[in-house]
Image (cartoon, rainbow, N blue to C red):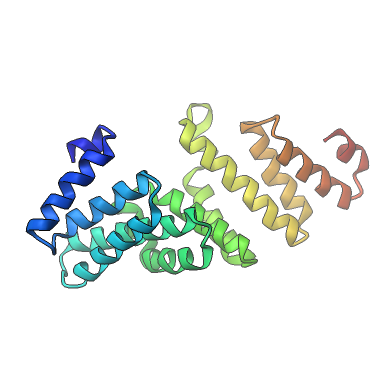
Length: 215
Protein backbone atom coordinates (compact mmCIF):
# COMPACT_ATOMS: atom_id res chain seq x y z
CA UNK A 1 0.00 0.00 0.00
CA UNK A 2 2.96 2.34 0.70
CA UNK A 3 4.28 1.72 -2.82
CA UNK A 4 0.80 2.51 -4.19
CA UNK A 5 0.64 5.85 -2.36
CA UNK A 6 4.13 6.68 -3.67
CA UNK A 7 3.06 5.89 -7.23
CA UNK A 8 5.43 2.91 -7.45
CA UNK A 9 2.85 0.67 -9.10
CA UNK A 10 5.24 -2.05 -10.30
CA UNK A 11 6.54 -2.54 -6.76
CA UNK A 12 3.04 -2.59 -5.32
CA UNK A 13 2.01 -5.13 -7.95
CA UNK A 14 4.94 -7.37 -7.10
CA UNK A 15 4.07 -7.32 -3.38
CA UNK A 16 0.39 -8.07 -4.07
CA UNK A 17 1.28 -11.02 -6.30
CA UNK A 18 3.53 -12.46 -3.57
CA UNK A 19 0.59 -12.30 -1.14
CA UNK A 20 -1.60 -14.14 -3.67
CA UNK A 21 1.00 -16.91 -3.94
CA UNK A 22 0.52 -17.49 -0.21
CA UNK A 23 -3.23 -16.81 -0.10
CA UNK A 24 -4.95 -17.24 -3.51
CA UNK A 25 -8.27 -15.95 -2.09
CA UNK A 26 -6.99 -12.64 -0.69
CA UNK A 27 -9.54 -10.14 -2.03
CA UNK A 28 -7.49 -7.08 -1.07
CA UNK A 29 -4.57 -8.29 -3.18
CA UNK A 30 -6.80 -8.98 -6.20
CA UNK A 31 -8.27 -5.49 -5.96
CA UNK A 32 -4.82 -3.95 -5.48
CA UNK A 33 -3.48 -5.84 -8.53
CA UNK A 34 -6.46 -4.67 -10.55
CA UNK A 35 -5.90 -1.07 -9.51
CA UNK A 36 -2.17 -1.28 -10.27
CA UNK A 37 -2.75 -2.77 -13.72
CA UNK A 38 -5.34 -0.10 -14.38
CA UNK A 39 -2.93 2.68 -13.39
CA UNK A 40 -0.31 1.11 -15.65
CA UNK A 41 -2.76 1.08 -18.56
CA UNK A 42 -2.92 -2.74 -18.67
CA UNK A 43 -6.69 -2.95 -18.79
CA UNK A 44 -7.08 -6.61 -19.75
CA UNK A 45 -4.93 -7.66 -16.81
CA UNK A 46 -7.03 -5.34 -14.63
CA UNK A 47 -10.17 -7.15 -15.85
CA UNK A 48 -8.79 -10.52 -14.79
CA UNK A 49 -7.95 -9.38 -11.28
CA UNK A 50 -11.20 -7.49 -10.74
CA UNK A 51 -13.10 -10.55 -11.94
CA UNK A 52 -11.25 -12.70 -9.42
CA UNK A 53 -12.06 -10.17 -6.70
CA UNK A 54 -15.73 -10.31 -7.65
CA UNK A 55 -15.69 -14.11 -7.46
CA UNK A 56 -14.08 -14.10 -4.04
CA UNK A 57 -16.16 -11.19 -2.78
CA UNK A 58 -19.43 -13.06 -3.32
CA UNK A 59 -18.52 -15.14 -0.27
CA UNK A 60 -18.49 -12.12 2.05
CA UNK A 61 -21.44 -10.27 3.58
CA UNK A 62 -19.79 -7.66 5.80
CA UNK A 63 -20.08 -3.91 5.20
CA UNK A 64 -16.38 -3.73 4.41
CA UNK A 65 -16.77 -6.41 1.76
CA UNK A 66 -19.71 -4.51 0.28
CA UNK A 67 -17.54 -1.41 -0.04
CA UNK A 68 -14.85 -3.43 -1.78
CA UNK A 69 -17.48 -4.96 -4.04
CA UNK A 70 -18.78 -1.57 -5.19
CA UNK A 71 -15.28 -0.22 -5.75
CA UNK A 72 -14.36 -3.32 -7.74
CA UNK A 73 -17.41 -2.90 -9.96
CA UNK A 74 -16.50 0.73 -10.59
CA UNK A 75 -12.88 -0.06 -11.45
CA UNK A 76 -14.07 -2.81 -13.76
CA UNK A 77 -16.46 -0.41 -15.49
CA UNK A 78 -13.78 2.23 -15.82
CA UNK A 79 -11.43 -0.29 -17.41
CA UNK A 80 -14.01 -1.10 -20.09
CA UNK A 81 -14.68 2.63 -20.52
CA UNK A 82 -10.99 3.29 -21.16
CA UNK A 83 -11.10 0.69 -23.94
CA UNK A 84 -14.23 2.38 -25.38
CA UNK A 85 -16.27 -0.75 -24.61
CA UNK A 86 -19.20 1.36 -23.44
CA UNK A 87 -21.82 -1.41 -23.46
CA UNK A 88 -19.74 -3.50 -21.04
CA UNK A 89 -18.88 -0.43 -18.97
CA UNK A 90 -22.57 0.30 -18.52
CA UNK A 91 -23.19 -3.19 -17.13
CA UNK A 92 -20.75 -2.60 -14.29
CA UNK A 93 -21.75 1.02 -13.70
CA UNK A 94 -25.39 0.01 -13.40
CA UNK A 95 -24.56 -2.72 -10.88
CA UNK A 96 -22.48 -0.30 -8.84
CA UNK A 97 -25.10 2.44 -8.89
CA UNK A 98 -28.03 0.35 -7.68
CA UNK A 99 -27.55 2.38 -4.54
CA UNK A 100 -25.94 5.62 -5.69
CA UNK A 101 -26.00 7.38 -2.33
CA UNK A 102 -24.19 4.44 -0.70
CA UNK A 103 -21.59 4.39 -3.47
CA UNK A 104 -20.96 8.11 -3.05
CA UNK A 105 -20.54 7.72 0.70
CA UNK A 106 -17.97 5.00 0.12
CA UNK A 107 -15.94 7.05 -2.30
CA UNK A 108 -16.67 10.67 -3.37
CA UNK A 109 -14.77 10.02 -6.61
CA UNK A 110 -17.80 8.07 -7.80
CA UNK A 111 -19.02 11.42 -9.12
CA UNK A 112 -16.42 11.00 -11.85
CA UNK A 113 -17.75 7.54 -12.57
CA UNK A 114 -21.28 8.91 -12.73
CA UNK A 115 -20.01 11.35 -15.34
CA UNK A 116 -18.49 8.42 -17.27
CA UNK A 117 -21.76 6.52 -17.16
CA UNK A 118 -23.61 9.59 -18.42
CA UNK A 119 -21.20 9.84 -21.34
CA UNK A 120 -21.57 6.12 -22.06
CA UNK A 121 -25.35 6.52 -22.17
CA UNK A 122 -24.92 9.52 -24.47
CA UNK A 123 -22.76 7.55 -26.90
CA UNK A 124 -25.50 4.92 -27.11
CA UNK A 125 -28.17 7.55 -27.73
CA UNK A 126 -29.84 7.03 -24.34
CA UNK A 127 -30.22 10.78 -23.90
CA UNK A 128 -32.71 10.84 -21.05
CA UNK A 129 -30.67 8.40 -18.95
CA UNK A 130 -27.55 10.42 -19.71
CA UNK A 131 -29.33 13.63 -18.79
CA UNK A 132 -30.35 12.20 -15.41
CA UNK A 133 -26.79 11.10 -14.56
CA UNK A 134 -25.31 14.43 -15.56
CA UNK A 135 -27.96 16.30 -13.62
CA UNK A 136 -26.73 14.45 -10.51
CA UNK A 137 -23.14 15.38 -11.33
CA UNK A 138 -24.04 19.05 -11.73
CA UNK A 139 -25.91 19.02 -8.41
CA UNK A 140 -22.78 17.72 -6.70
CA UNK A 141 -20.54 20.17 -8.57
CA UNK A 142 -22.82 23.15 -8.04
CA UNK A 143 -20.96 26.36 -8.92
CA UNK A 144 -22.58 28.10 -5.97
CA UNK A 145 -20.69 25.73 -3.67
CA UNK A 146 -17.31 25.80 -5.42
CA UNK A 147 -17.11 29.12 -7.24
CA UNK A 148 -13.73 30.45 -8.26
CA UNK A 149 -11.95 28.26 -5.68
CA UNK A 150 -13.06 25.05 -7.39
CA UNK A 151 -10.12 22.56 -7.61
CA UNK A 152 -8.83 21.93 -11.14
CA UNK A 153 -10.06 18.30 -11.28
CA UNK A 154 -13.56 19.27 -10.16
CA UNK A 155 -13.56 22.27 -12.49
CA UNK A 156 -12.67 20.02 -15.44
CA UNK A 157 -15.39 17.49 -14.59
CA UNK A 158 -17.91 20.26 -14.04
CA UNK A 159 -17.16 21.79 -17.44
CA UNK A 160 -17.30 18.37 -19.12
CA UNK A 161 -20.67 17.63 -17.53
CA UNK A 162 -22.06 20.98 -18.65
CA UNK A 163 -20.78 20.49 -22.20
CA UNK A 164 -22.12 16.95 -22.44
CA UNK A 165 -25.47 18.04 -21.02
CA UNK A 166 -25.63 20.77 -23.66
CA UNK A 167 -24.94 18.21 -26.42
CA UNK A 168 -27.85 16.12 -25.17
CA UNK A 169 -30.12 19.17 -25.23
CA UNK A 170 -28.90 20.07 -28.71
CA UNK A 171 -29.64 16.56 -30.02
CA UNK A 172 -33.11 16.76 -28.44
CA UNK A 173 -33.55 20.17 -30.11
CA UNK A 174 -33.79 21.95 -26.76
CA UNK A 175 -31.76 24.90 -28.01
CA UNK A 176 -32.51 27.39 -25.24
CA UNK A 177 -31.44 24.85 -22.61
CA UNK A 178 -28.35 24.11 -24.72
CA UNK A 179 -27.32 27.76 -24.51
CA UNK A 180 -27.93 27.90 -20.76
CA UNK A 181 -25.58 24.98 -20.10
CA UNK A 182 -22.95 26.31 -22.50
CA UNK A 183 -23.01 29.76 -20.91
CA UNK A 184 -22.09 28.14 -17.59
CA UNK A 185 -19.35 26.08 -19.26
CA UNK A 186 -17.90 29.21 -20.87
CA UNK A 187 -17.49 30.81 -17.44
CA UNK A 188 -14.96 28.06 -16.74
CA UNK A 189 -13.35 27.92 -20.19
CA UNK A 190 -14.32 31.02 -22.16
CA UNK A 191 -12.11 30.22 -25.17
CA UNK A 192 -13.20 26.64 -25.77
CA UNK A 193 -13.89 26.31 -29.50
CA UNK A 194 -16.15 23.27 -29.13
CA UNK A 195 -18.39 25.10 -26.69
CA UNK A 196 -18.51 28.25 -28.82
CA UNK A 197 -19.27 26.28 -31.99
CA UNK A 198 -22.08 24.36 -30.31
CA UNK A 199 -23.57 27.53 -28.86
CA UNK A 200 -23.36 29.16 -32.27
CA UNK A 201 -25.31 26.25 -33.73
CA UNK A 202 -28.00 26.60 -31.06
CA UNK A 203 -28.29 30.32 -31.76
CA UNK A 204 -28.62 29.54 -35.47
CA UNK A 205 -31.56 27.18 -34.94
CA UNK A 206 -33.22 29.85 -32.78
CA UNK A 207 -32.82 32.30 -35.68
CA UNK A 208 -30.47 34.45 -33.60
CA UNK A 209 -28.04 34.86 -36.47
CA UNK A 210 -25.98 37.75 -35.07
CA UNK A 211 -25.20 35.73 -31.95
CA UNK A 212 -24.41 32.69 -34.08
CA UNK A 213 -21.95 34.67 -36.21
CA UNK A 214 -20.31 36.17 -33.12
CA UNK A 215 -19.62 32.70 -31.69
